[in-house]
Image (cartoon, rainbow, N blue to C red; front, top):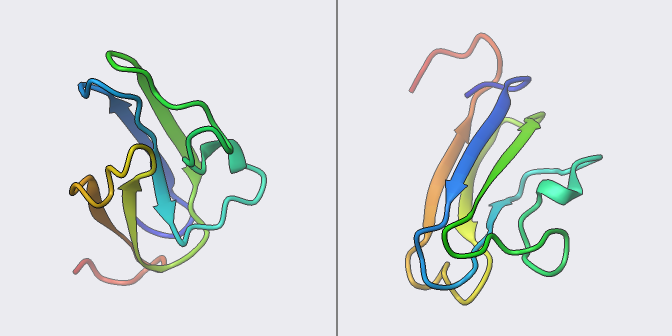
Length: 91
């Protein structure tokens, strides 16, 4: 992923509780409804439901996506997100 790309992440919730995903450190100027904190900027994704997070990334760096409902981050619902500057070679 590079600066200026559109991140499109569809989350299908197969848990028995609601979930949401927060992109930690990513600016959400104009897209705060895609920020992920359940019951703050969006409703949680119900069990069996799905939600697509979609926004343009404007920052280069190493970030992380993590669950933001029911302590799911501490249970291991997280992954890295690396965004490169345009023209930077792949890692």
